[in-house]
Image (tube, rainbow, N blue to C red; front, side, top):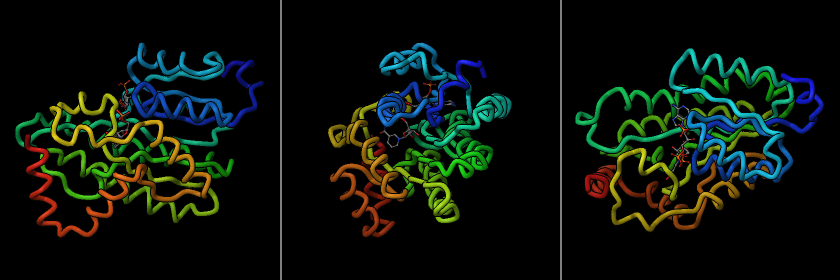
Length: 259
Ligand SMILES: NC(=O)c1ccc[n+]([C@@H]2O[C@H](COP(=O)([O-])OP(=O)(O)OC[C@H]3O[C@@H](n4cnc5c(N)ncnc54)[C@H](OP(=O)(O)O)[C@@H]3O)[C@@H](O)[C@H]2O)c1
C-alpha cells in the first residue's frame, strides 16, 4: 500500500464483481455513503467504466482476479488483507448458466459453484477477523433462484441456495458484531441474462432495477442486517414461492425456463 493511500482515513469496502450491473450501482451508492472502495472484477474496460462513473475515481483501488481459480483468489485475498481499515465486504460477483444440466459443459457449471458459493465463503472467512475488529458489515448477493430448485438453471439454484443458507446462518452467529445482509433479488436488467445464455422469455418485463435493489439492500443494512428481497413484485413472488407446493412449483419453473 502506498503512503498516500494510508493518509485516506475513510472506511474501506471490498466490492466483488464491480465491473457488472449490480457492481456498478453498488460502487455508486457506497461511494455516496463515504466509503473508499476496493473494486474487483476481471474485465478491465468495464471495470474502468464503473470507476469513471464515480465522483473521485482516483481515490479508489482496482483489483483483478478470477475468483473461481484458487491461486488467483488466494493472491487477491492477500492483497485485500493489506487494508486494516476494511469495514465492509460485498460478495457480489457471480453468474449462472442456463440449459439442461447434461447438455451444458461441466466446466462452466463448476465455475458457477466456485464463483457463486465457494469463493464468497472463502473470502468471508479470510476477512472476517478484520470486519469483526472494525464492527463492519457483509452483503452477500444471493438470488430468489436460491429459494427453490430450478430446472434448466440447476447449478445456479444450487449455488445460490447454498449461499443463502450459509449467509443466513452466519448472520446469526455474527449478530451484534458484524451486520450481514442476505440479498435475494429477482431478475434485473444487467449482463446476467446474456452471460447465462438464457433467451428472452415471457417474464423478461418482470424485472427490478439495479438502483432499487442496491438501495433496499443498504436500507436493510441500516436496520442491522437481514434477509432482503427488493421490489414489491419480487416480494410477492417470494411469498408465492413459499406457499406453492414444491411439485407444482417445479413443473411451473420447468415450463417457464425450458423455452
Ligand atoms: N441480474 C439478475 O437478474 C440477478 C438476479 C439475482 C441475483 N443476481 C446476482 O447478482 C450478482 C451480480 O450480477 P449482475 O446481475 O450484476 O450480472 P453481471 O452484469 O453479469 O455482473 C457479474 C459480475 O460478476 C463478475 N464475475 C463473474 N464471474 C467471475 C469470476 N469467476 N471471477 C471474478 N469476477 C466474476 C463479473 O466480472 P467480469 O465481467 O469483470 O468478469 C461481473 O463484474 C451475481 O451474483 C448474480 O448471481 C443477479
